[in-house]
Length: 414
Image (tube, rainbow, N blue to C red; front, side, top):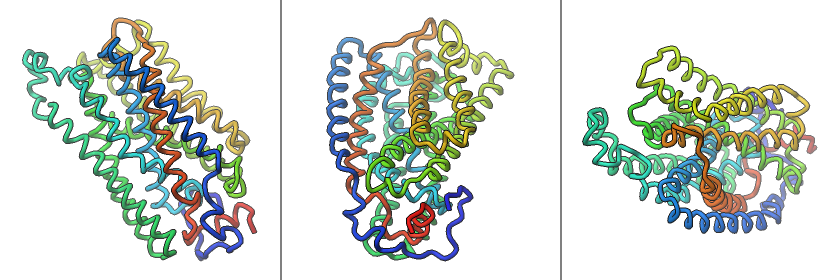
């Protein structure tokens, strides 16, 4: 029963005991330790190189760090959102990868800690954080009650407390389900996921304004928040497919994750590709047709003087090519091919963020610095190390979920 309609089996029952006798039988593969160590080493090397870059080119360091940090935050929040979507729908597609989503969501405290360089470099990143700029600009003076350093920091902490609060509550209920097998806990997680998903979207909309849209504080877009949230879902699904493909080639998940599951994940990825494209094109169409000087400048900076090639690459490789490839049923059922599309999508998510951030500072010509790569290595490596560490903490399946037995049987495990 690998369906996406959100329906659960009518008569839930526990799976047959030979499928999962103990939690140890469903522990993470042994080479996860090696991946954790390599990620930590990569993160350390990236951090050391980035620290050198901080002294070489301080402004570029903070801008590059913002791109890398926002990229990892997007994957994490997207995983939290997809986890809540799974609890709401109770769809069969989510159970085999629920632990992956939960492990990613548990890295939120690390990402809050990793936000410190952005807070220290706010004056290098945001023009509204510099008093001399605000003093000579009536628009920034009017927005100063909201766009100021102290309130920005408070809001950032509140966002992470809200997201982390829902992630913690869901994680505790999931752990209690493993320990007690209480069937009522599934319903509690479902009831919590509904308001959690709505509040996540609201907080992410404000975060999009704070972190990215305010880079050009004269510009605004009412659709930018959902555009930001759509990118979260897309990045998280791509990451989920890559990790699921890795697990599907190793015990114990090799006997659980089937071609049907990957077909479901490919369908979801296709849906989010189209959703992101709809948000992106809607914003472009409204602003371009309006042709107002305060609005159109955002796109002019990103399609002129060399940036247009990046915009074209985003159209082709972020939407057109993945859309065509994901129409193939055979591709979606082959984890390696689908994983290749997912890796490409992750790369395009970073490029999209780079395209959103850097032209705000270099609108005269295309600009790229090696710090863009080293900060990604630093933040991405440390985040991946934390993710793999969290993935090892729990069995790879929610062993006492009341619907797990039917889903395992549907995968061919009689």
